[in-house]
Image (cartoon, rainbow, N blue to C red; front, side):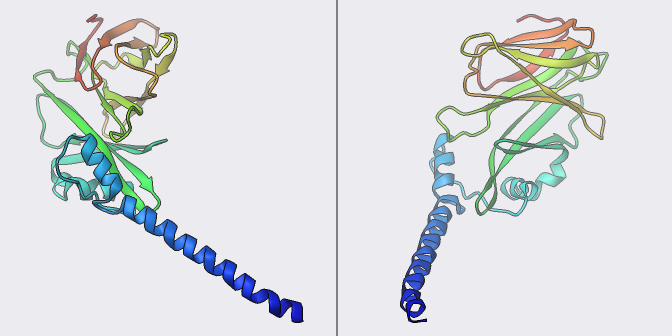
Length: 239
């Protein structure tokens, strides 16, 4: 019994030290992830902003994007697809009133220790080229970095398919020029067909984007030369 009594102060000391460590760890994480914190400062700097963004922390990825973009985003855009990826969650949206062309917007939210935060986003709107089976345009595309604050991180290549004969899309090219990356193709509940590829840092421009039919016929191809570009690709076109 005497030995137990003598050991109790040591246990209390260890418990107290663990409590202090946990408080310090939480404080450090909070300083990094709080709205306007170090993580937001890094992102703002990467975006070329002179002021630091205050990106809110939320319980869900959808709410994090909505709060960052503003509540009016629901009046302008409708969410058509969400997909968990290694970096977080991708949210695909389309403009509610956009006519006579094609548009697509993607936002990414990442999970931090304290909640979800908006991480990156971008989109395009191409007018005068309606994306349907009768159009000369096979698909639209855009390339953008997923994590802006990284010196060179992963990139997202995405778009919408207008030519219904296209069943798979690939990117050919990396440091050795030998590896292929295949796109995920999804038909949404509203009937849109979107595609996306998460490209690692080893893939750098220029590289070739190719779209094929289920008969393995090349339907469209494009050499992408800029890490931040968008446009549409015609059927069996070579650029």
